[in-house]
Length: 333
Image (cartoon, rainbow, N blue to C red; front, side):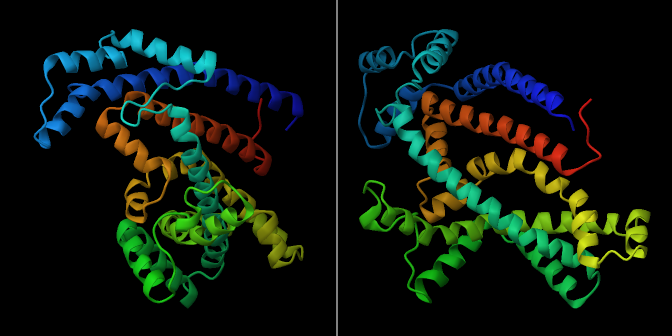
């Protein structure tokens, strides 16, 4: 692939991201406000459950204070203009803090967890998938096939509970959260980084099991599809070693599904791991997003949805670029 067409392609994709993000942000803002009522309604209902009564004047003052009495379009344009002009995502109704202060550390921890899970998934699924294809119907293939069915069938939250018990009882490991108590509110340091990585292995294993199981099946199927092809037979007849043959041709082509998963794996790990994050008490984006959606905290929820969509678009661009670099059959005209 020539350099100039690729740069033009990347520039066009980046330009298309701008209207895409505007459209997604507007849809997210609308969807968050679709349920009946608003944050004040939810707040009043919560107080009513505790036998506290809020009169109509107080409710009207709260709506005026939060800007909820404005039309929805006005609220959206105020929010998006604050993001574009000042990088201000608004104030969280529930937490009474700037949204940016609430989301950045959680998003950073979520990305660390997502990248660690992605690396673990690839490191496990790639060699096992190749082995299962090369040693088709062997004992090892049957064993890994059973593992994939187990990984796909067992709910993540159940696996989390089992591994938490094993880690706490058998190994004396602190479970729940990503930090030890003394580091939870401490400033970042080398010791805190070490403590983070010492707690990271448990959620990485839990989140990687199902995605690893599915990618093993995909890699095995793709390799089995490539191995009988004539180019493999020709390369083997010319004396190319089996290892070099596998690494140079079939594996590179079978990698396409792995690379294409970047587009959805990162946002899926952020938004799709809510139950696991709650069970493990992880300070990541998923529990806070769920809480914001339940409370109709539209600025906080909208910021998370916007960032997840941005990650999806960026992941799609990275996938397309890597696919063009890895697979010689893909060319940009």
